[in-house]
Amino acid sequence: MTDNETKTDGSGEAQTDGGGTGIVPPDDETPTWSERKQRTQGLSRLTYEYFERARREDQDLRQESSYVERDVLAFPVWPHEMIRNLSLTSFFVGMIIFLSATLPPHLGPPADPSSTPAVILPDWYLYWSFGLLKLGPLNPELAILGGDKLMTDRMYGVVANVIVVGFIAIVPFLNKGSARRPVEQPFWAAVGMAGFAFAWTISALSIKNLIPIDSHLLFDLTFLVPIIVGTITYAVLKSMQEGYMFDLNRRYYRLRPPK
Image (cartoon, rainbow, N blue to C red):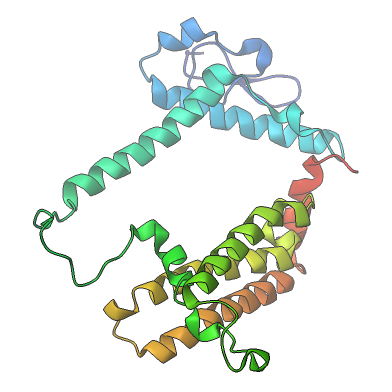
């Protein structure tokens, strides 16, 4: 039998006999770090061993009991977790380098401090906040004040920012469930998707001068699109609670201990 061949034990399960390239061996036959370092495969081999052993141990734990504590599934930080994180990091860094090399950003002319641009906008990641400042049409005119507004449109936009940020901050305290997948709590998943869609639509409203859509239609879509997205999300996830997908998720989350 050569080094690259595998053998079976009494249970019929395949094992490696030393430095083979077959299925990852059990714990008592796992090579040390120095032995792994001597192999020519390097990072690719270690990555394969991590995922293969994780799959095997996870499968064994599922078959042995109805539930297991999550910390039982932990692996040593070195080399297992470090190898996995290094693989994922290398992938995303490579994608960033590839995109920066193939699609370099366009650099416009340098800023002229002596002239004011026609359109003044904040950085793109603040468009949503800038859009909330343009909710003047929603600022009610109170008859008790003779048709005047309770606050100016600018102050109304500031209050809208406080309300939106406050709602985002309080959501974790409102939803204290143990669900880890959207299908387990469709309502909160729909709220999240509606909020995500609202961030896009309110950002589009902030640059309405640059979008070839009627401003009144864009204002209406700002609030209609999130409602539609949230409704569709809720309906889809609710339908997934019956059938194969929900059963699969429920079996997966047997890993969580019961309350």
